Image (cartoon, rainbow, N blue to C red):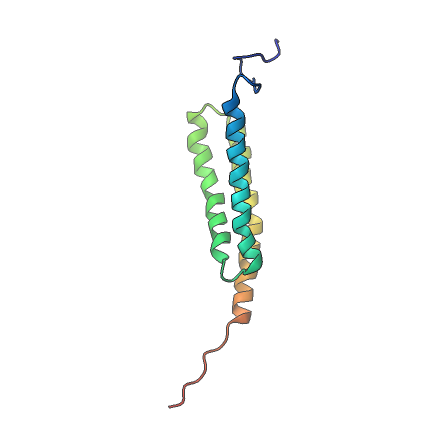
Length: 116
């Protein structure tokens, strides 16, 4: 088999700069998501929505992989690997959400009694 060359599948060299450009945007998106989760670290009760957003994204991976995988001729087992990111990614988010809800309940103040 010949090694990849210009214009052949698997060629990631200077002849196709748009492939690396797409990777740059993918990396940027991951950094932006990481910044959003910093808010959970600073104030978990107020920013629990970020964790829930992450959980929705994990669930969304499964239909996306099942629908777009065959459209793009991606092998089924590659789609299974993609879906595993959603399955395994939601587990720590479920734990964090449970801990945030527990913290919210522990720090909630009882309403003061209003004199009649």
